[in-house]
Length: 402
Image (cartoon, rainbow, N blue to C red; front, side, top):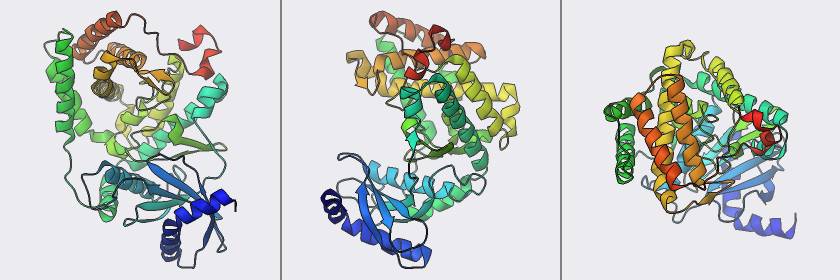
C-alpha cells in the first residue's frame, strides 16, 4: 500500500470498518477489506472507494460509495444530498433484484443509512460512453450507442409493472417525506417559461396552455410507459466492461415515463456536460432498436399513433426542462458547460422539438410558440454557432449529420 493509500485508508477508516460489518452480516461470514483506493477527486458530491477483499472468497474487491455533505442526517428529507443518496441506493438495489436484466448495473451488496454509504460490485477495467463519442471512430461510437439504446429498452421493458416493488424497497431504506406532485412541479416550470416568453415578446398560440397541460398529464401519468427511468443516462454514467454495458449513478432515478431516457439521443443528452449532436440517421436507428426492446414489456409501443404522441410529449417535456433551467442565465451570458456552451444547446433542443412535432403532426400550438421563441433567440444571438456533432462523427464529413 502506498503512503497516499495509507493516508486515505486512515481518512475513511470508520467507513471501511462499517462496510466490513455490514458485508459480514449480508454474506454471513467474516470480511476484511484492505488496499483502499479513492476513485473520485476531492470536491465531488460522492466519495467512491475501491477496496480489496482479503478475507478470501468472492468477490475479490468491492466499491464503497459514500455521500459527501455537511452535517449528514439520514432523517432530513429536505436535504437534496440525502434524497439523492437514497434514490441512488434504491435504484442500485432495485435493479439488482431483476433476474431478467442481471447485468444492467453493478450488483448491489449492502448499505448503511447511518453513515451514508452503500457497497457495489467492482466492475474492474472499463470505459464510459464518453470514450467512443469523444475519442474514437464513427463505427465504434455507433456500436456503443446502439448497445446503449438496446440496454435502455430492455431495462424499461423489465421494470414495467414493477413500481409497487420499487416503492416498497424505497420505503424500507429511506425516511418518509413529503412527496412532490409532478403535475404541480410541471405547472410551475411552465409558468416560469411563459413569463420569460412574455418578456421576450414571444406570443403563445391560442391552444398553448391546453397542450402544456396535456404534456404535463403525460409526464405525471405515463400509463403503459411507466417504467424505472435512470433520469440522467449521460455518457459518463454508461460503463462498458468489454462488450457488456452497465448503468451507474441513479441519483435522479425513479418510476416515470420510459421515453425520458429513450429519446436521450434525439434531445442531445439534455442533462449532460458532454452534449453534442448525433447524426439523424443514427438517432432513428437507436430509437427503432430501443422501441423494439421496450415493446417486450410495453406492447403499446408497437402502435405508431400511441408511440409517436408519447415521443412528441417527452420531447416537449425535455425542451421545457432545458429552457426552464438554462434560458434565463443564457440571456445574460453563454456559459461553457463541459464541451459546449448553453446557447447552442438551447437552440438545438428547440429545433429538435420543432422538427419532431412537425414530423408527427402533434402539439401545433407548442410547436408554433417554440418556433417564434427560436426566431427571437437566433436574432439575439447571431454569433452562436450550431451545436456540433460529437467528435467521432465529425471526421465522416458533413453528410453524417443527415
